[in-house]
Length: 250
Image 1 (cartoon, one colour):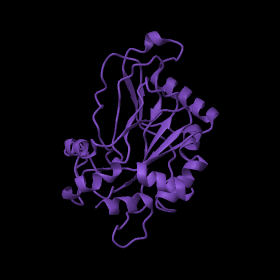
Image 2: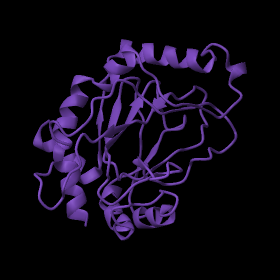
Image 3: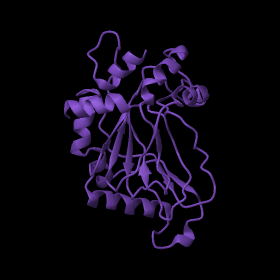
Image 4: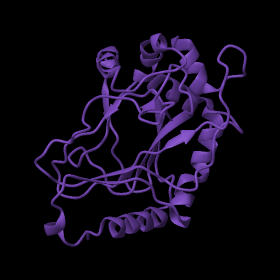
């Protein structure tokens, strides 16, 4: 990845890789998702729910999508070679359908990273323990009308300071949701729109939100994380852009 892309990631908190996943692979993934939820793209009468959640999908097509060459190159450049875990599957999938109801996950938020000691909830902390990146994989055409994820551009700069008071242990994203919203409210909004096979590679602290589906065609997307292979010491280790940005924001 060249310096211009790294600078863009540092400024905005995300990069869009158009066609990162070959069209035929993206189409195969979409077909497998339709089979998983037991619905058909040719039968809108069956689309009665606003969202179908699929936890994870494995197999050759999804493994190929997760490890597309452009993405592997980005992971090495942004997180560091040897510092991230190769994915053999993709998840989770919020598959959204045209519906009048508002989604129940529409608030501005960041993603959780690791389980609490008792396993009752998921947490995150100021250095993004366990999670190196967030990805948004598009497996359908996504327009401004059919429920694109909204992104607060540059919001990754605002979040480490919000999380710092919660220390190394971290907290549930619901505990500091209002603080995350307030800290990033001044940021401009971008829509995660595109075509099947496009992938948004996002800083783990990028603030985003789901939207209601006012279009006519289902939106198939995955939002997996990229796990860290090693935990980074912000004070002493060589840092790559993801962690450089966290340290600078603190």
